[in-house]
Length: 271
Image 1 (tube, rainbow, N blue to C red):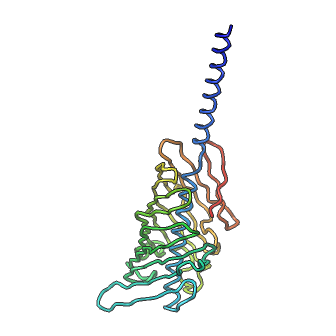
Image 2: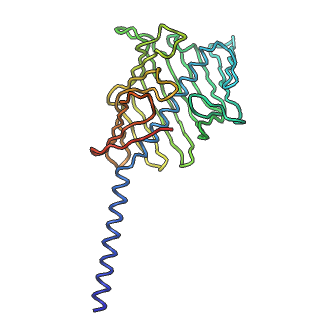
Image 3: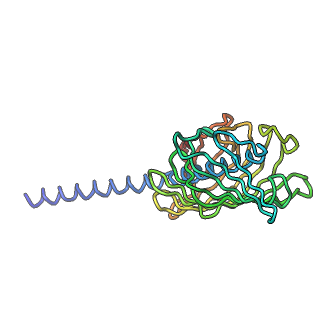
């Protein structure tokens, strides 16, 4: 009898162990980690783009937070702009995020100049205490033959974001068309863009993922200083898991997004 009870107890433990494992697998399957990390990287590097464009608009006028310094070298076709957020005593509040360190921009022309190339790198640059590294390259491809809109390629290479939870590695290739607001130079709030492209990376849990924009992203700068993508969809494919669909549709100009996995919708807030 004791042997039978022991066997039944062992079987019960085994069944519960299997049940717990099933729960773990289900949790992993519905994890939104890759989506969260992609959205965080996307927001940080979109923000960097706006900061660089601000530097060209400020016409070498220094600010306390950040300060912009233009270094023009006549012997070369490349110039330098240093965007300095200071050493963190205290951190600088910019576009609703705390920043410190420097963004260093090497450029062959300004944002609106056809065929200009702007390469941003980073010197101890932090966003909300997260160290950001890598490079962001923007190339003005001139105007589209049909629409006459300015077009840009935007490449983020070898990027990493060191967070308290781990490191996000991220690369991105995007194509951007300036659909509205290009004629009003000093009013950025009427600027609108359409964006397509891809990305790839590793989430903080070490799992690789890819991203593809499946429905053109519509960017509206009236949403500044919050997240500026107003609509569109992207497909996130983490290694070993089913696709996740990020839906950017939101009329509130905030950083809240819906992610759909196997028909279930999860809500993500990007800091």
